[in-house]
Length: 300
Image 1 (tube, rainbow, N blue to C red):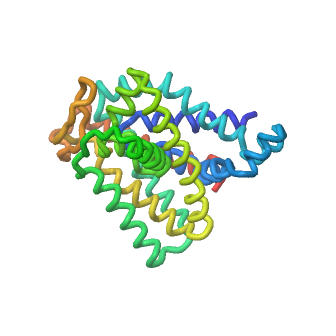
Image 2 (image 1 turned 60 degrees about the vertical axis):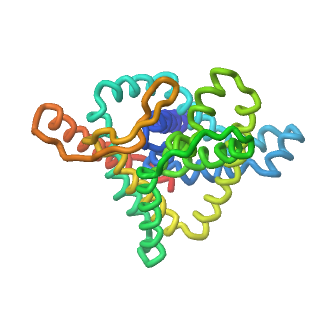
Image 3 (image 1 turned 120 degrees about the vertical axis):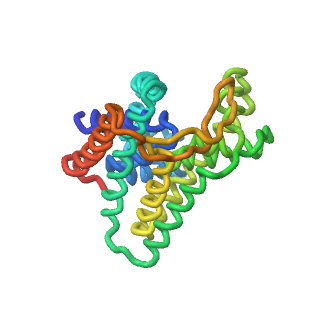
């Protein structure tokens, strides 16, 4: 029971991370050492799982899919979205530099500890690191596409959006903004109860979740060091979005609200109380990851 309670809280941390722009729940899963088990569990929803459901062999289905693990993690994520995440939204609105600073500390420490899991640094690992960094950085400079309600594109948005959420350092909602369909799928379709759009988007997300988990499982199995290096690069590249001291450079108007696409970065202009507190929160974020690394059971 204690194990599942811990998983529930890790899921809550993932849910909170998904609320913060530029922070991925996949990053938190990687930091808390449940990422590979999460991928492996999602991958287990296959033909065998379907046969077990049809034959009503629930105990075997639960064991095959690691269902209690998934329920604990996703239960925590959903709970945080409707509880703690609201607090983080409030704090992010009124104290953005402080929240960015804490997450910056989390992410910068995770780069070291995730990178440390790479057993052998060779040419493929270094190239993967560079590719991941450049890919994540490039998202900060891409101009958003225009809205597209074509059902095939909506299905594609579901695949790419959920895949982005699974990758540490990438924000699925931010990817939807870049694809031009954030307002259509996350706002308009929900408020208007557009069943067709929501169903197609959900099917795309489900397909992406199941298929992409198989891809990640395969690359982890055969190219673990290169994959970890790529994910480390994604996290490294996301630092440009999470840097605490920045000013909005470009916005788009979504559902009556401005959504920031790009920033102008700068160093703190003065050593005031906010700057000192932000610096302390960066250190606190680093210490949180250090504590997780040294005291959490090694699951990966």
